[in-house]
Length: 276
Image (cartoon, rainbow, N blue to C red):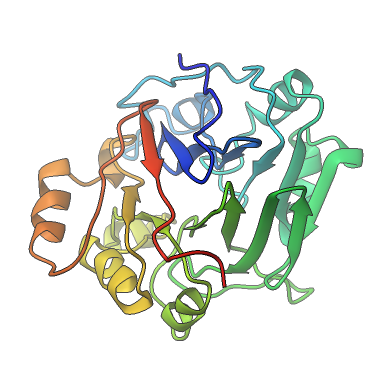
């Protein structure tokens, strides 16, 4: 396991935890987003046609003491708001704030988020902690969905830390206006799922994500200089081969991407010439 040392000033280090999970490390702050480190889904779906047996072991224990400043969840699905992780992780990281959609507040509390450290947002919301800034925008997990209070069920986060600004979509597909929103934020990188979608999974209750090409096209349309693909290699029924990701992205003119490796450091430099 890495000890996740501070990044060089003016850069951001990213460490993939598998699925949509990442640790983001600046020279001052440490953020964890959408970690799935337990095995609750394997137990839930054991013996079904959609086995959630892990294809990769977790790189961290659920109670890893990282000195985390913020734990972010994009929505309530268990591989993004892990029922086996929230309570032990928050206990091991006593200064950590837990940030999630306002639509997920009850679920977050049920899964162990301390009420006094729970911060909820809807699209358009912002939270700041010293040099760490987070903005929530809508995500469409096949569609833009809301609860009966009108709150978005799925969010993406624009995260600024260490002088670098990145976008993590959570689970998402393209929707009207997304590229323009991202272009206006002058992003240095986008963390996007690339496992795609199909009718069989959808009909069984498993909504999909960007295809490989859609992820590349979004970065091109929004002027994002680096794509970090994710949401592959965890569950056999819901993945895409690394060779297919490379084949799909290599032919896209002007696109730079980096396939993450679990728990290996990926350095993200500022790519947009400063923050405007």
